[in-house]
Image 1 (cartoon, rainbow, N blue to C red):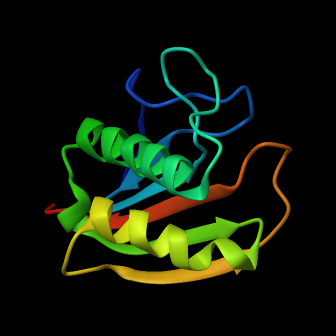
Image 2: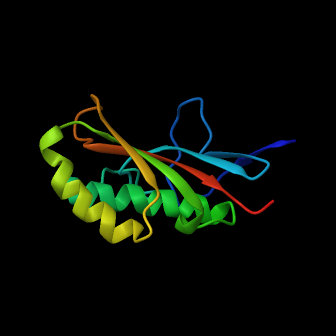
Length: 127
């Protein structure tokens, strides 16, 4: 099976050695998206709700570039900088993702200053 790189201008690209997403067969892995505006490169929002909403917009844009949607996502991994943000993040997450919810793991880690959340996605597409 060939590994295919997925890119879109509708989600931010980082100057790091990574791809926005990789598809191999029916499996699509979207790299950890951050709350950057794809047009300006600026962080969107100062609250966890604003940043979560932007991150999920970015994930959706990458999924769409691969011919997929949130309904194809089987797993999301959420990386938060502060455990006290979990409830507010859950509200924004639920509104953006919708039911039925994919499986999810949430971990806490340090991100660069001003960044409160990072999320990556694993999707399975029709072959």
